[in-house]
Length: 120
Image (cartoon, rainbow, N blue to C red; front, side, top):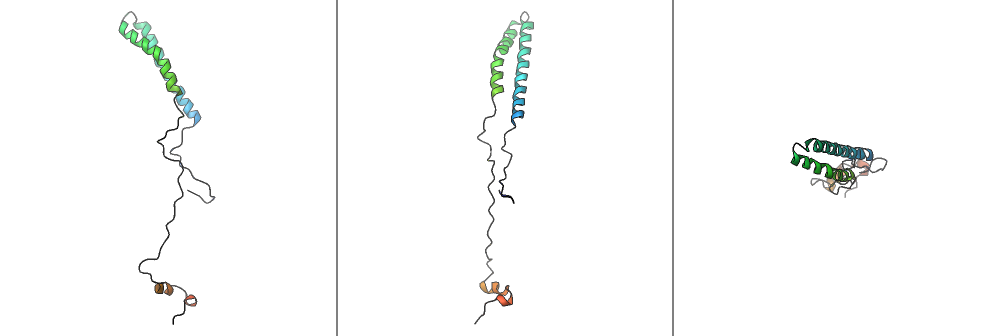
């Protein structure tokens, strides 16, 4: 789409998030994952002599969660192939054609007298 100055206009629906916002979101996901890991390690210590099977489950969760958290935190900034294109092509203007009722004689009637062709 072209404007008066001839500059291209882009839609922003397919634009990616800003880098700062993306990093902040990844940091937030990592901190939440590490908080869950910390809680699971504390639960392992508290439940070790009370409920051994639950304590083993929280121990496994606490051991595996850092790897999962790093993978989740580092995932991002990939190009999504399903996003729509960001460029909108210029719209073509339709060409008006004479209507079915207009004949060359009717077109001559609309011209000023001095520009009408002479008839024999």
